[in-house]
Amino acid sequence: MNFIQTSSDDGIATLTIDRPDALNAMNPTILKELTTNIQSAIDNPDVGVIVLTGSGDKAFIAGADIKEMSQMTPKEAYSFGHLGKNLADTIEHSPKPVIAAVNGFALGGGCEISLACHLRFASENAKFAQPEVKLGIIPGWGGTQRLPRIVGKGIATELIIGGHMIDAQEAHRIGLVNRVFSSDELLGETNAFAQLIIKNGPKAVAESLRCINESSERQLSDGLSHELNSFAQLFSTDETKEGLTAFVEKRPAEFR
Ligand code: COA
Image (cartoon, rainbow, N blue to C red; front, side):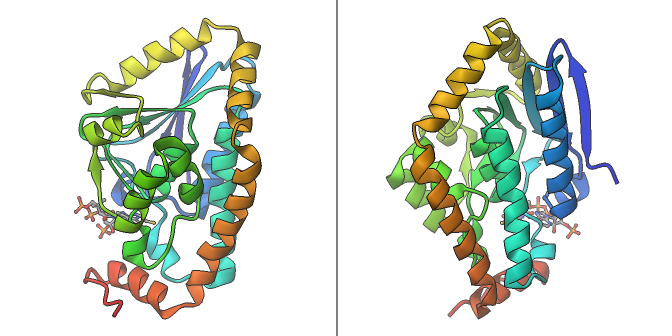
């Protein structure tokens, strides 16, 4: 099944995650499909900028697929986490800018995928959160490492251990998103900025991205491996089982 819609115009490849019945939540199939599509856009000489968005007007990505995670063993969680890490790494290390056009919920893994993008433009109805602790898990696709690097350690800690949602204006205030537009304007304005980038030297843009990444790379890779192990290990605990199952059963989780 095809969960990613692709279109290409004037050097801009737009990839749209298309699973509206689950608010574009990411399962292993979608993670693999999106990684393949991002890589194809990177390899395509006609593409200068990649835009990533979600279908519908409600969600960018409502996170990793909680229903599937609720059945995972630690080993399966590691493989799942690895697919997400691989996607986020592919985006972050793309020599072509990847812009997240966040058109609604960007929660958990959805927020983390946006963090791996080089720029985040949001619609006024966008909502961001790292709500994993509410499920008895932790971010597994880079959230504990990339969020502090973008918004600072204090605010990242607040968001990750609070698990609460923030709106687009607050995300803008803390530097999580670059720009906020009305829903109607989001894709048009994102494309306009992409056109601005396309006019710049592609090697200079690619080198800029590489240098910016390298400013934090060394410690980041250690941190990401540590995070992934920790993410997977939690799947052997009752707390994780309870948190994930409670969501699936549509009831509050009882951790204590
Ligand atoms: N994984 C799997 N399914 C998800 C999902 C996720 N992360 N997020 C939403 N869905 C599904 C819902 O289960 C529901 O499916 P159903 O109709 O088969 O029950 C469908 O998407 C619509 O979601 P619903 O909860 O009915 O919409 P809402 O507008 O009432 O609430 C959210 C929207 C985003 C607040 C709510 O869906 C939510 O909290 N999702 C989980 C977010 C999360 O914790 N993400 C991080 C995971 S690590």
